[in-house]
Amino acid sequence: MRAGFAEYQMNAPVGHTDTGIVTSTPTLDSSFVCRGNDQKSPVTATLVAGETFNMQWNISPAALHVGDCSVYISYDVGLPAAEQRFFAIASIPKCKDVNRRDVGIAIPLWLPAAGNAILRWDWYALHVHPNMEFYAQCADVRIEGKNAYDGVRLPTPYFKIPGLFPPTGTVGGRFAYRYGFSPYNPCDSAALAAYPNVKCRADGSTGPELAMFEGGDVANPTLRPTAAGVQTGGVTASPTVAGLASGGVSHVVIFAVTINHFLLFGLF
Image (cartoon, helix red, strand yellow):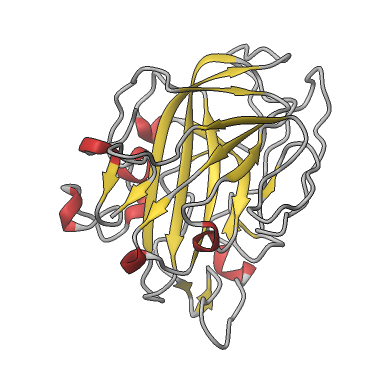
């Protein structure tokens, strides 16, 4: 697992002195990719194209800040973190609202198969605006599906993580990210002019467009946000109380916390 720290715990945002990788512009640094850990690790889970897997993040009450999360995939397991190309498959606005709950991520039908890929989760916190806090975690996974990854064609849009997001909450006096408190100013697209791979999303978050795959064997249906605000690039899902995507659900809780076991995406 590309946890970056022992026992998968993340005790401070990327770039903070507690992390050992200090930077005032964390989104521009390669440590934002997988928390500073480039090491290829054993595969920890299998994602099946067209099915749904459940994720959890375990954020302690003291750190349960307003903010938004996204989920990404990369096939560049052999490249340094700064060179790895990722694409987004899910957007989870207000992700603190589903803390310690199963969140269903619909794996797109078109997702190319691979024996080893990187699953990445990130979260930006808005509570100290215009300063920002950024968190990230990764895991090595296997992907099963009809489309083969040929090492050339990638789902689009794809991008490298360093430089993807603005490092501050405002750019040129405009909101690069929504303001998490009253008066709840929205993201302003003008603030993202120098960051062409991220947008002010329809769900209110800031992030890249969800990926599509041209020339695959299967289509790219769209999943609309569920009651919990989960938007992914997979099959259409019906809302549930816990915000799980339904329809072809794989009931494997990959990142759930268990007794005496630390959560991969844990923030303590």
